[in-house]
Image 1 (cartoon, rainbow, N blue to C red):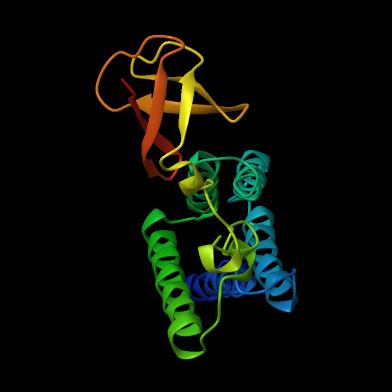
Image 2: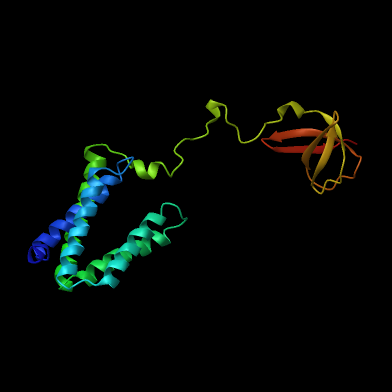
Length: 211
């Protein structure tokens, strides 16, 4: 059995099954049969190489560390943990292999087939990445749905108020007992000066001194 599990063709098949299983899990909302099959294929790979004396506890530790780092990628910002996890996983496969060239070819074939399956799932079957969609906000706050980034105070156009602070050019004025943050049209306006709202651009309210 050990000789069978370490055969280059069987190794390629096991790694391909593992890769395709991982890809299939990206389109599932929870761990399913594909994920278990993929993990089982990796277990068979390392079991065979461990029993053959090709993989030691250090290699198994590196493999487990890679899986944990990939898992942590879903909870940590950036792509550092995921990149290190994939690198550790691939390195553990190389360390477990008897021949670096053979294991490299097997990994390459497994990755290529997994990529093909990935694009087939999206392009041909119209599947969506359910796992990643849970981590990304897909909804948009549209104005048509009542969402606004700020209140447009067009009701203040033409109103006259008093400068509560010095405007240089930003400051605060009082209009009908309401404090309003504004900017002057051009220059410096003294405190307590009379000002008139001449323009409203979203949250930006422009005033001019009334002589």
